[in-house]
Image (cartoon, rainbow, N blue to C red):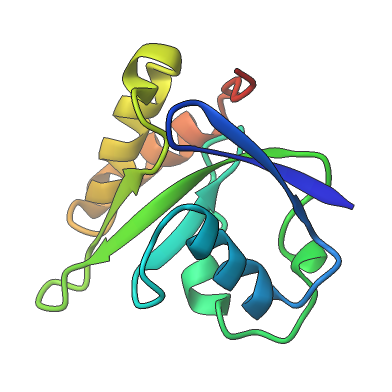
Length: 134
C-alpha cells in the first residue's frame, strides 16, 4: 500500500501507507525539507485537501485517510491566527507551468475561510478531476 507525492522540482516519491499517521506526516515533512513545526497537507487529484493538519498526531494508519496508489501534491499550510483562515502553498515548484489548474484552485482554497459565499465555487472546482501525473 503506497501513495505517490509530488513536491520540489517535479519530484515524485512513493510513501508507505502501512504506518501510523503521525509517522507518515513526520516523514513527509522531512522529505519535503520542512521544519517539524510547519504544517503540511496533501491535495488529491480532484483538488480535495486531506486535512492532515487536524490528524497529524493520530495513531491511526495512514491508509485510513489516504487512498492507495493515488497521486497527491504536498502543500504547506499557513494559518492566520487572527482571522482563523488558512493559506495553502504548493510544495511542487513551477506547478503553474506543469499543472496550471492548481494555481486557481490553491487561490480558492486559501480564500475559502475568508469568503464563505465562494464555497460552492470551490466545491464545484474540486469536483473537476485534475491530472497530477508528471
